[in-house]
Length: 555
Ligand SMILES: Cc1cc2nc3c(=O)[nH]c(=O)nc-3n(C[C@H](O)[C@H](O)[C@H](O)COP(=O)(O)OP(=O)(O)OC[C@H]3O[C@@H](n4cnc5c(N)ncnc54)[C@H](O)[C@@H]3O)c2cc1C
Image 1: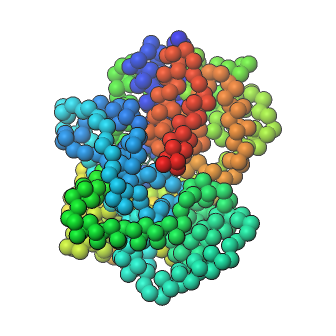
Image 2: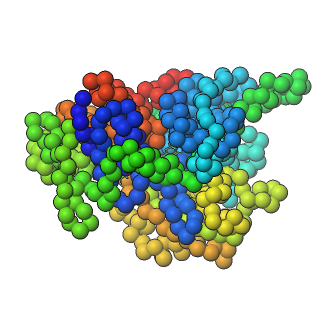
Image 3: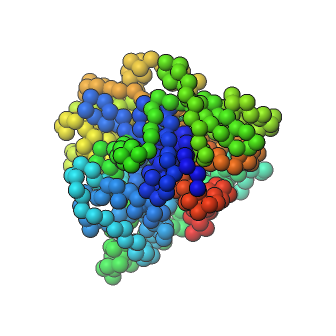
């Protein structure tokens, strides 16, 4: 068994690997973290007593192993509650059947399975102990997220309901119907772009209403330049006719259920309320706790230590080099190396260490693209939109599909955890922008960006600018590894890196894969399992998230 594991990055994947090594083996982990913060994208940003979550991290997993891991570290605040999450029987948490961060967010299925009244399977029981420390706990939060469009709220995922029809209005519905019928007769052939794909299934009007603006905000690429194949992978089986069938069936069922006072339907409805775990003080709290445990157990974590050079000899990595903010270089040797750093940077670091990079590999690696992310936290007295009783909106987050603003999503941090907000009389929200680090928005000075963001939410009637007390800007590079650029040739890059036999790629950017925390953790756990067992099956690690999505789509 190797003696020393060098782990690049103190995000969920790196820290999971470190703790697993310490709990289950003699292998000593040395974690090298570029920044001065623990938790990677899953960190919690602190600002004047308030806390911001980058993106809003729901804690749930289809993997009981991950759920148990979290529960062991931070038990739920109260025991005996049901958590609806993506269990092995994935019909449990119906809305979350969508991939967590679907590339086409905001455009989930028009209907959700389970609405038609079928019984949902019973959940697996996860054991948890009573909390010892009232702060080190997971809250169980109800999920509510809607779409804001036409200055109105729509269900997310969009469902064909009476409310939806009312919000859209007669004229728009007529246009939707006409353009859908037109598209049935005049299918775009060949179907090359995502735009073609969506128009062929939904008609131009519905595509323009619910798909185009948000997709382009998220990906910064016009839908006519995203491949149709991508749509086919993500939203296959979905069309307006399926949605209409569901609508009619649901309405019919609803009536008959009311007539029969059908108890099972009620039970189904209750179980459809998705609830997820959430650390009392945000996701970073869990990862900071893990980091403490790693250090208590003798593992090392070096902050401000970006890995810039990786040395290899005959397809084995021998050492890495970090550079401190003062420019001091440190060489760290190890027997095995786990990387969560972006693959593009990894290849550059190998090159800096003298590795010969094949031309095709460099081409693919340099062509990988990432979407970057800005969150502007706003502390406000009140929102101008509210629940019917005048209270704070219950949404955890809201998709902003209004095409006249760049704003993509809005988080209401109070609803994730009231403990994220210092002054409980205030509303603490996060305005999220998807962008490239080359965009003017990314480069805008903070003060200008704050004014810009406030003007946007005021423009769409979410709040009044004069109700804003304070603002804070956070820029997060490389939040979304993109499946365009040279991604179609990704296998060439993967094969070359996999040929270094003691180098293991784990996590999200580490594998250039749309991994959530649980997938990131599972990749790390699998490497540790393999090293302990004496053989790591790299192909199986690449299969982790793919497999699950495959099963999901099959369902
Ligand atoms: C908007 C958004 C919403 C999300 N919502 C959810 C959710 O609801 N639920 C969920 O489970 N997941 C969610 N995720 C995904 C989750 O954030 C990631 O899966 C997770 O943080 C990935 O962990 P990681 O360790 O692989 O990478 P990261 O979190 O990216 O951590 C990598 C670490 O490596 C460090 N690093 C990079 N380069 C170097 C280098 N050269 N040397 C040393 N260190 C380096 C970085 O500084 C960072 O700390 C969301 C992500 C986003 C962007």
